[in-house]
Length: 438
Image (cartoon, rainbow, N blue to C red; front, side):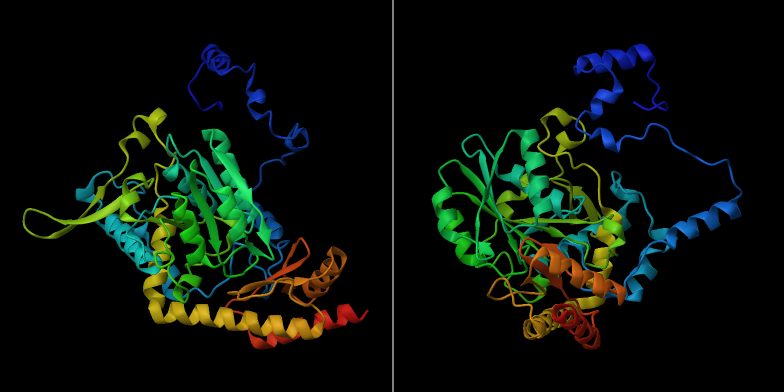
């Protein structure tokens, strides 16, 4: 509805009336009034050099911590130099939507290779390359499962809160009832799950590892879900997939995840990449596009778009998903990262991340921060402390150039990756000791 849209005032008024609002401001009725800006206080025009200096001064206000011990959905991993070297080449910035296969073989092959590697990593039959981030992929997976008989979706309270919020938003819009099932000692409660799932249950979503870093009994939970006749969705950390049982081995029907750890910078929260894969039985419900490999009339290998939903592009009112573009650049980056790391490199990154997390947990326990939850974990864990102590610890760590863990209910959620050295972990523990001694 901006000034660049060629609609005269009369047409705009008719459009607003058709959806039941009086003016454009009413479209933002759910936005708090405190978020609105009455007038932009813009300075007079400046030269290119002056603008550059002003932007550099603004950027200098950002603080980049040399040590990062915070994850909670976005992780600082080592990115091989070859990843950015390849993805920054001009000839690889191709059109994002490969409608014409005969002139889009490069981008189609890149998508196909990415999809293949995601399938190898998760054990699933088919993957797409179209979803915007892990949260939207999780929400999209519910739409794949709901039908006329099975209309209720379930999610564990041990899932990342922002993923749950995104699911709730999507389900509100589509009229699907979403129930959040309680945790027990930091894990999904199998008993509560079994009691909740009825004949109208469409699906259950489990995060592995969960938000608190703990490893769930994914295979057992999968059996409970399937016994109820529902679909089993697993949200995964792709780095953890290198050393854990694959979702397919746990019985998952659909797999989603955040692809940011696969060669994408944390970048203040985006752009990220939604991983989405499924079993062959659900292949036609998978949103977005799937690239297939074929041969031309001369027997040469070629790549084409296949199984894409026509409704997503043309008959949008009948579409089950709003995904119709591609996350090609992010997916391409993830594909280059996976190729550069290989199975051995990815496994090494996962094992180092996990071993350092266990080292830090034991050291913090000796320092006076016991674990809030017991059990196996990957590279994140929660230590018990009150909110006041958590603030003091993180403030002290920040002064030393260390980004501490994420404050959560009951404690601090810590994270380590292969980029954190043992010296940095030891320094963290010493600072924690000093804070607790005061």
